[in-house]
Amino acid sequence: MGQLPLWSSILYTIEHDTDLPVVARFVTATVISLVVATAVLEFPTDWVAAFELSASSLTLIMVFAIQHTPGREQVAIQRKVDGLIRAFPERTLH
Image 1 (cartoon, helix red, strand yellow):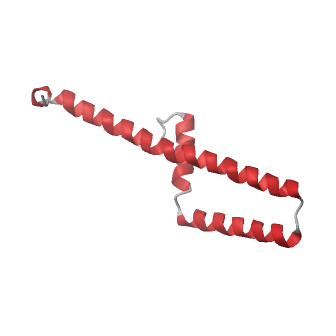
Image 2: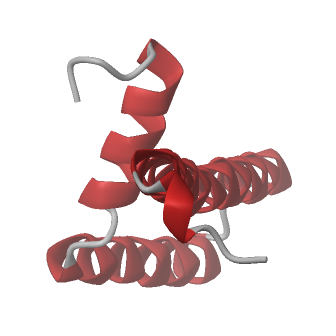
Image 3: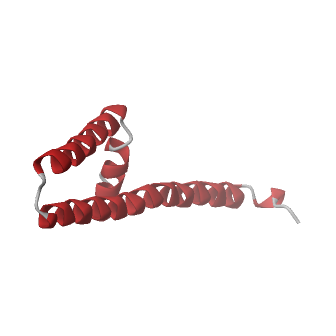
């Protein structure tokens, strides 16, 4: 990953780390805990709004991270295919 641009490296790391089952369990437990705490402790509405904003923001970041990785891999595969086509020009399809 040393040759990747900074943002590409960050998005790849986010996508890779959030793919782990332990992260899914942690996020699920955290969300359930916050929902229960909100209901039991009757948190002020601004706290609920802050939670909703945080959840929406994280969702948007994950969409970009998930979409970025396959796109980057597709470009790498296309470069390899182009290299193979250039290496064997007499075998091109017509």
